[in-house]
Length: 203
Image (tube, rainbow, N blue to C red):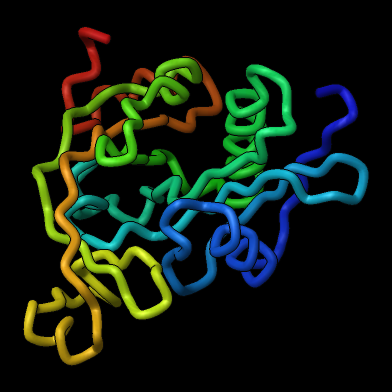
């Protein structure tokens, strides 16, 4: 991993990579910090941060007053050519760069999709807090094969609307929810833990 580099990349490059390599074949719209994992000049991994689809998710961490300090680790993928532990190494460096690029962000929420057999092992390995799970839900598959969230641009998509767009319903099981706190000192971390609406004291 000594030869790998982590660099900020533009959203188009990140989206193209995710659409080609990630199981969802898609990602949220809108600007977000995106980072690439490079082996020399070859892009071999991508991590995208994004604003969560739901305002309630953002507010669930510190409350509505501080919802703008919460972001989502939205997409993560690394090619299989990398050695063991590359993923955790990559996440740690992306979180460090996020703190530098977006110092107002104090929490990162992420979800591991049990439908895909993911239980959040990589998040546990990078010292994320486990903060529960979502319920089962119906997503959609669009005409290109892309997995679509039932909430688009802040609006819930009805079954009728999905049908008109040619989207097919897709039952999904729960997602495990994880949280990173981005503190610059032990004192600030204690403050964030105290502010957090989730009980992190037992972890």
